[in-house]
Length: 286
Ligand code: NAD
Image (tube, rainbow, N blue to C red; front, top):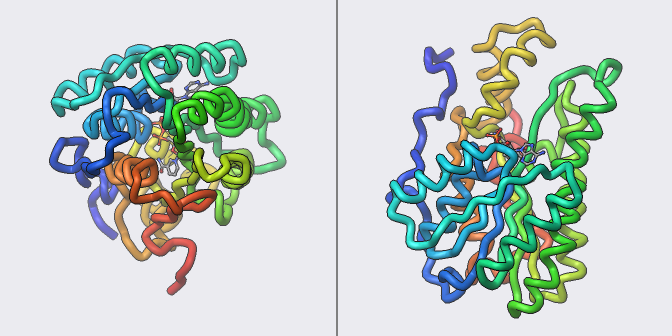
């Protein structure tokens, strides 16, 4: 047992020194990267990291204040690329179309990072159907429709890529998270479908991490403790990190760097595949 409430919460911060920088002709102001969930956690880090690499970023979220903070974080890093904000709700089809249209006005829409998501912890017998539907809309339907609308722009730009934020829960499941598990497995199916239709020009990949120190994770600790009759400390150490060989959560910038790599020229053979960075969680046991 450690006294650290969230091991890894003190991990690498979102600073210029911790962002992976890739020398890539397409990492330039004319390339637009559309990032969802960009007001918080992983999405914010992805937006800032891509801007730091020189892309023009279209950062979207329902949370307008959080988006403003993301712009400030980009400025703190002296990011070469501009970050534009587009407030929108991914449960609304009209918003989804408007978000893509607006992003495409900033330049050549080449990259789409589907990061927005939410969690709900409840046993299947009690899982609220409305919550299941909401999670499907935000985490699976929206990435599909965003890709649908972005694909023509990416083809027109001569190529691009969609990066989908999956999870270890897209590889194996844990109890009381049925909607999340189903969405993340589905997102890997979407990734492979996009790869199948991208003709090698528009690529797709997913990113599957274990736990990352963000509000989404800290928010689910009390519910999981309740469901399992554990202390919050036990939830972190036994449930979240118990099967991981690396006993620390990732930090958002470490995940953002996987998107920087995945969208880059160095990843041209990554198409339909998954970047599994889970500290050994799914492929090993003690
Ligand atoms: P977060 O809660 O910090 O950020 C999620 C963002 O999604 C928020 O800014 C929220 O406003 C936005 N969002 C939610 N509903 C929306 C809607 N209807 N329209 C537009 N935006 C909406 O969470 P995070 O931890 O950064 O998670 C981001 C993604 O990473 C999620 O898909 C999550 O499943 C995935 N993920 C997280 C972890 C982790 O441990 N944190 C691990 C693996 C995968």
